[in-house]
Length: 188
Image (cartoon, rainbow, N blue to C red):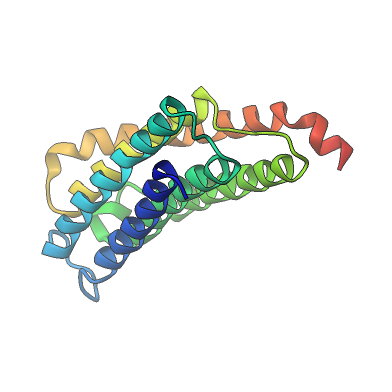
């Protein structure tokens, strides 16, 4: 276990805490509840560590097969978990439809399956630049939606634009990964 992989696993723990805090915001959920704002800051820390673990792994030459699979997996759990949890908040649902979250989750499952297939055949299949941009946009959008659910209308336009940009990048990067893996998919 190296430091970058430990940071990735720490991000998974932060993800669980973030989603649990969103869930504890009341039943029915209360927009602006204190646990929501704590979840927001936990999410910010978790999203920021995504950059840190990858940078450390590359800088120190500690890129591993585990890290290539676990890092994007944890990213997906973080973003999808938060988006699913936000479907409980009335102000978030004004902007975020269930079909949008389903599309994002479906793309993430598909890319994870393709990545798993490639890695099982000994072919490294790391995240590419488009996938990383998609993750940043998803994280910014999720954070903006959390602020909207927290009662901060200032970030509502950013959340609205972010959702549509997230959907576009989700489809584009998903198609890009399938294109890159076409030879593996045909051989399977």
